Length: 377
Ligand code: NAI
Image 1 (cartoon, rainbow, N blue to C red):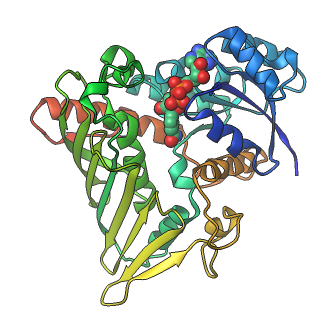
Image 2 (cartoon, rainbow, N blue to C red; image 1 turned 135 degrees about the horizontal axis):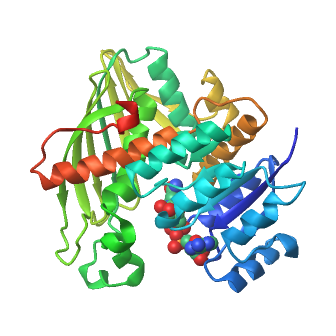
């Protein structure tokens, strides 16, 4: 088994998502941490990278330096992860793809649909992998749910209901905290707040498990804390290409909910339910039958659920190992064995199109609009 060389941009000390990437990338011996430009402050980034074991000549001050340095090496990195704030994703992803690197980009992949379409085209032209970190789709029991839908175990999917709602921005007295405020400021966050931050995870999950794409949607956005320009709560109704009805609620003011991401998929002959706070269990009910708890690690699971589960039954397998599953699929893809579940740039641009469509719909009283990127219409 080849160990690939991996580099990271962003995800510096104290960042939210950086540790999950390092734990994930290094969990299975498929990657070694070879290069990084980890912080927006060059000296801080260089020092932290070296503390994490990166050689001094590959502990870069910024991503342009890293691009130049890695491009010139015979032992250049095989994969770069981009875990910087959203507005930088497009430029960095584009530059690394064009220079012939495989990329894992954090969500949202870009700030606009046009940029997203450009990334899809550049990735295709370069022949390189451009994955987007919709990491919830890599939990073993989410892969199991998708496999069951594909195998017809719940029949044709009629309805998907999902929500991703927390209450961590629900304190109005904390609304001016700089770490919170930027998320609702269009100059920093773009056209959407909560829907672009968490809602797109839920929407991607709906497409992933139902094995279908969103075709049109109608949205209702609210800024429940009135000083916020962007929405902190959204309800989005959607229809998928195959006719499936979708309902999505996302909120950051749902005080008491910690990480309320769950999904229910209702088919003609059964229903499935999965929740990120109990990720080892998939709840299955056949029509007219008893509700069953399917456990990660038990016999008879799909190949993906078995492959991506590495601790024994009943041992909790959480978020960093879901990210690790993305890296396993990436390592296989780099080695030439494409993995069907790996979220790609097409998924990234579909999310951006859904965000812009939801914003337009919400502004126009919830009118139904085509939610597909122009390139996929
Ligand atoms: P954060 O603000 O906690 O950390 C950002 C890090 O990037 C910091 O270390 C900062 O110094 C560094 N940075 C900023 N600009 C940089 C630049 N130009 N070059 C190098 N480093 C730079 O942000 P957080 O929450 O970790 O989010 C980062 C990205 O990850 C966002 O796009 C966010 O949407 C995404 N994210 C994804 C999650 C998921 O479930 N897939 C969960 C949380 C965040």
